[in-house]
Amino acid sequence: MLLKKILSSQTCIVMLLMFCIFRILYLEYLVSFITNEINSGKLSARSQSGNSVQFPARSPSPETGLEYHQSLDTVIVYNRVPKTGSTSFVNMAYEMCRRKRYNVLHVNVTGNSHVLSLSDQYRFVHNVTKWRERQPALFHGHFGFVDFQQFGSKEQPLYINILRDPIDRFVSYYYFLRYGDNYRPHLVRKKAGDKTTFDECIRLNRTECSLDAMWLQVPFMCGHSAQCWIPGNPWALKKAKENLVSKYLLVGVTEELTDFVTVLEAVFPRFFSGGTDYFLNNKKAHLRRTNQKFPPSEDILEHIKKSKVWQLENELYLYAKEQFHFIKKNTLVYNHRLEYDVDKGMQFRYEKIYPKS
Image (cartoon, rainbow, N blue to C red; front, side, top):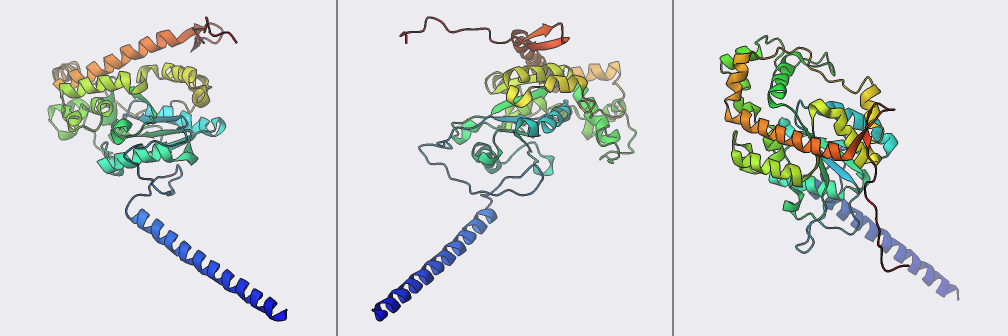
């Protein structure tokens, strides 16, 4: 009897040791796997605070692409065009996100490039659709439109953007590089100390004020085709217009930024309720203004308006403005008590419902 107990005890010890050895080997394998995945670039995502966040990238199957069992929570992608009021809009989102219980994530593209490599486009699509811990979410960054369907994704984020009069945007960016803005007034900018005016720069035919450099809003809306980034390309304008009406939930204009927020508030109160009041009453709402600007002269304006680049950029801007006004007219109504536009509310109903319950 005693012998049996001893043997039984020894068996338990052996089994426990074998289990421990198995666990150690498994953990070593797991560490090795994760290390290889990180080194190969398959684990990638960045948190709002800038700390790396890593998780395994699941390869899509030929049958499902990037489809998954759990449906995508609300994800908004704002591929923001520089100097269009985007910082003011994003600051509002950062102010409200904790209370509204959604996440805001900045997509910081290396070298301030506006074009993502094909592999980075895939990683972005994968992260947006799989990063459950950060949903619902608003992703924002300075990059061209990424077509999720191109990568086999059956879940689509909601794209938004803001466009600006192309000359105003171009001039604002020129002086921003020299004088900075009131958002970070003590930051020394790239061209600080250069007193050359925009007019003088155009007359001197400098590269930084080449009219080709104005070509930005069209390619941002067009996407990652090589044709999108050829200055003055009519095909790119056509594609940008198509994307604007079929791929974007809403594209606003800088001079009507508050109305843009009000429409979003009507559509997505979960993200933006209170946004209109924020823009009308919060002192932080319009922090970023270029410190010093000199308007271009009439002869310089005439020179710019003869260029194909300006003509196509301006055509897209006017097209976006017309579309935005159409949406705004059918979504908002003026509230005399509040003295600003509000959501019209539900304008349809269901009837003749059969079979009767």
